Length: 261
Image 1 (cartoon, rainbow, N blue to C red):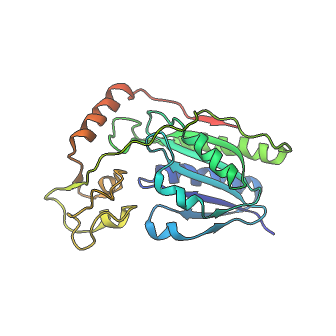
Image 2: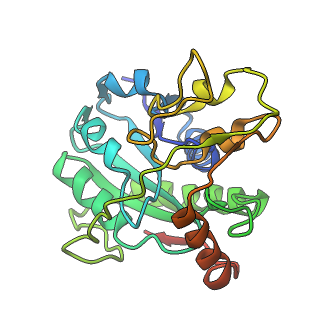
Image 3: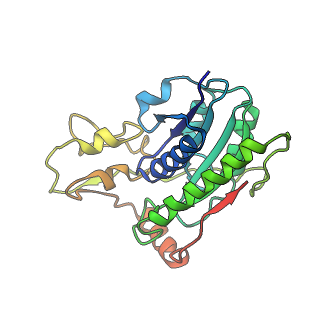
């Protein structure tokens, strides 16, 4: 049976995809294996089961939301089937903190029967503001993702023990916040291209009228804001504005990526 490198990711603003695919691609080169991508960003893609072959390696990427794995991914991960397959965790966070997200991911995939061999906490531009984690992941981050893949491959080739990967984090995991109930606003520049509705990972934006959005569905990933070609989408919520100011005040200084291997 031929080995595949399975790049599976949830990536509303595409930063997680870049790093997950870069890591998986390097592993494919090293193991002379095919890369197979599964993009979990849109609703229709999150209903399928993902089954790995006996020799396959899973590279699972996700953005960190509030120091945790995005809640909507929990039922999706339950559909990923493995049997002792090596798993690589790629957590991408907006320069604040990844808190318990990697620990949570390690625990979940270990319980699912995977052997978590490595994990990376990589920086991405914060979805709320371009002034935090600006332009990341950049070319240097992608280079580090490839170096991470090389170290991961070495470990997979030499791994003989059953020790659980040590990562940072706390138990119980950080409590999920109640969250902000808000939907994006739409400016006059909107010309109904529908790109925002097509990019929304929770189908919160109406395909009949992109100016209508369901605040109870919205997860504030800002995919619509970043996707709009005329910058017509924006959030006008006071709590989100205040949080952005806090981020820009306390977390603007560049952070380095962290790997666990």
